[in-house]
Image (cartoon, rainbow, N blue to C red; front, top):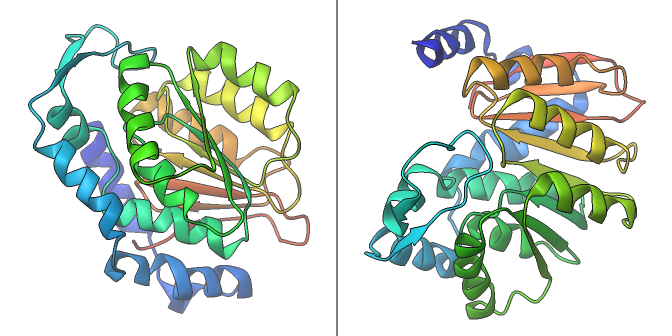
Length: 255
């Protein structure tokens, strides 16, 4: 019922390019967001997605997030169909990162590495991806090796520990995709930790911002942070920018 109401609110408030006055948002929407659903996906990566969706392999999943309490033994096909991003979302993530010329990319929540592979296709990109479950990460790593994605660094373990350690030794980050623990406090923690390594042109994207009351609460608080100058709600994704040249504004865009 919560997601139905959230979707109703989204349809009530969403707008398209005819209501956009910001040159940046108009350009981003017209060139990237709106047409991305119709762009061709990467055939090599999608062949891996197809293989995973047909796999009968079962793995023991270590879940540090909202999936705690479920049966830890799950089939690969179940995971890829129920958890992994759609091809159009993968294309959109890559296109946004490419639009803003992002190179230092962080992904929280590797799963089987499909989004990681899309992001690795960006010229000069270095992708660091975090996954809590070793069995899931092993499959992702095999996919990286299969496609020769040498610009992906996979960090395995509890993100509450591995992320702060990495960020303490990291340079400024251009792009972060938050798709790990879909609960309020972890999401806020990840945001604040990563924001300390952000710069004026960084792009943060949050998955499933209307997944639950907790995620919606986190999204509302994040978009209202002082340092956030612009936020975009696509229902399935939330995007924030920090560029001080922008006027603080929130958009709900048709996608």
